[in-house]
Image 1 (tube, rainbow, N blue to C red):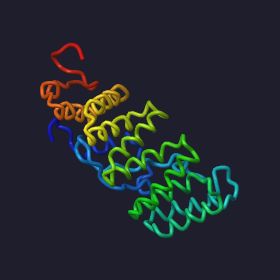
Image 2: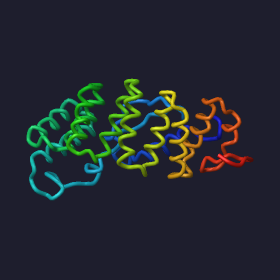
Image 3: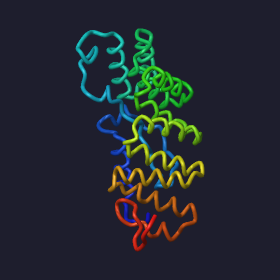
Image 4: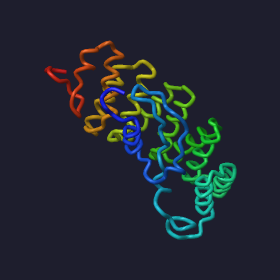
Length: 237
């Protein structure tokens, strides 16, 4: 690969930006997302509410049956007991239909089982109940990408960025999604926004150069230099 970026180190950088943290097993990978930057597997966004250690039965220590079932579902996911995890999350939702952590777990589990419509339904219900919860947008976008539904992938990232315009990782993912649907100028702009927020993020710099190549601007692609995506030896935009 040109530019001297080792694929494994670059993959770790991307996963770190998305925020895999220590929830690698329960975060679960649903498949490789095609993009202009070197092909990689993108992990599902980890659940913030589930990531911290919580006492069994809920964050406040009360014996909440739905939260206890969510905790059980998480444990089952970690050992690959996907059918039993589905049962635990569904039972949690039977007790508390508004439990977004149960919906998240159900969506991840269905995604691993390739029951994509069921996974999407869980995430859409999350969006309805908790539109500020970022996890559903990321995972819906990844599912659409898995199914080659790239305009829908774009739409999910755009919706999330209206909520969180400061997320460099989402600008990067949106840039790659734009390139898949031929919106090269918008892809270039998205990579520049990524670099404005995360100047040292090498994959965005690489993707910016490749995006210029896709527009036929070889000179600008070759001239990309520096962590902010500026061009060497020229002035102006």
